[in-house]
Amino acid sequence: MKTHNKILLSGELLLEAANIYKSAKTDTEFAKSILLAGAVINIVSPLLQELGIEPSEIQHAHVVLKLRKIDKDTLTKDQLRKEIGKSLKFSRMAYNSLKHSGKGELKASDDLIFEANLSEEAYFLIGNAIDDFKRLPLPVRTINSELPGELLTLLQSSWIA
Image 1 (cartoon, rainbow, N blue to C red):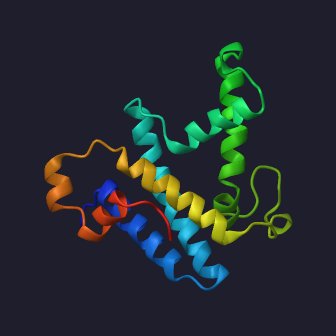
Image 2: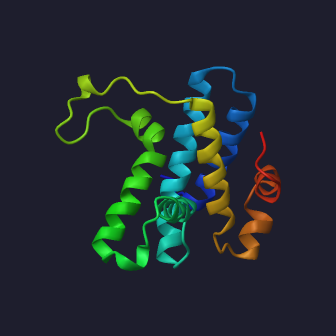
């Protein structure tokens, strides 16, 4: 059995998400991009948090708090966690809708329809995944010898599809 490095795999998934997005013509292709980018975020974000680096989605959640005129300094840790959770739930809606149906007391058969612009959702998630991947403190050796050149180009350029 072969062992796999999740960071290296997530880099390949990120590249695939961006490539699929760039040539996408159908909602199915945009959905694939969303699922791939979401997988990358779910690998990279916890590692960033462990390293004390705030992932893109958390940064966006803080912006949402400011827009809602909620002073995060007046909230308890539990209240802040709940408010950030609301923002994350909203930003991950398309991804979560695609990766499963039904959750908690919601029956799967009652969770088969959702509304989203899959192209916009994919663009947003890929952008977050790129931002987060760029913040990983990868060893120079990994960057120079293990990441594909096409991924390095994606990471070094602006995400404009």
